[in-house]
Length: 589
Image (cartoon, rainbow, N blue to C red):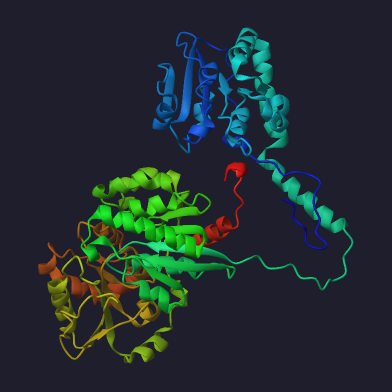
């Protein structure tokens, strides 16, 4: 494929190859090869990154007396590819850190892959060269790494290893050559020199006359956001936060199992409703079959370049449909603080090209199933639909809500009540607030509340309103009583709103109680548990309404250093919507 450059464009007569920070990849200890000889390799767990069944034992011999084969990035896929694995193979799971230490234990780095695989560059090879290993590769890598590596066919790998094992000086010299190659051509210190050359090139180029030709805009591409059937508006609100920050040339569309779909519609986006089997009284198997067809048709209709899935639960109907679209970049946005029984969904991680975890202020209190995988995901700061600075000023918000300046306003947001009965705790807490004559309770009902049961006001100073997003008006509030769902919790804390958190502790929810406990122990809010602390409601409300207590919470919340993770995710989606994949064999697409 050829591309026509814009008029006046300048192309450098050099390639910018991969760079590596050599300080993070120290030279391995200078030691002679022992016995058994340690051959190693590391790569992502992909069967195509391994040689064919017919040549694997030529490259990684099964002779346990002479060789140990040490593998970083092993897994069940190897047994599936080769049926039986040699006993002298040390199988280690894939990891993102500790690689330099792993490489330092090897004598030789040997990397051969399947004939059908096309390696874009060979970053793992570069890392092995950086630590000064003798690296053995198939000949097609020679244009990339020159004399820094040694090249041979699979049948001659053992012969090459013997040659270097028997000649200590040859072995030492090859390792030094590998290290110097990286320092000369791939060290991160070369980056400033590259930029300087570009600056000098532009400085030396005569100024061109303005041209009336305009570079044509990028074609519009679609991003499909899909979310599950949360009991609130959290998943859709989080996706709206991202969608509203995408560049104009990316067009979002929504698919959701939640009745909060209307939030996306009201924001002006195309939206599709996919009912959950719980709403249909359908069996999971039948429902997943239908869901697979619906998602398949929806992707065919929207034709997205990026599919962003926001949920804890991953359904087989979704993954089966996505498997039919290998060219779509698939992202799973999953929040932390999982319960142990939700671990089952981790088995679907491989169905996505990337996993993003919105940050959690209470991260230190997260010991759930996803905590062990943080190094394998992109973690961004907490995500909010609105930045705290985008909220209405206090005077304007109170005017819009019809609230007098002298009232002490307590906002109450305890969720839809769809899976966790808050009726009694709601009544008790509101009554305690209203005991103070200067208070006004502004109860904000969930936009997807299924009925108005329990909607009666408890006095003249108790008002029930529907606001979405209510956060826009939150500067009008002096304090809040709120559930501790992801969105609400981070809005209250990052907005500096003194809040009594009443976590929803239903079994199908995340561990809201851990968020609220973090707030209580760090002075960023208070915790009241429905089933344990209700008799203490008067004491909690007394603290909530104490002006000095509220000022302390607000001050501590204001000290949190934060940027909106929604903007980072939006940039990530935009980058991948324009990315040209080089890890596929285009002739077989």
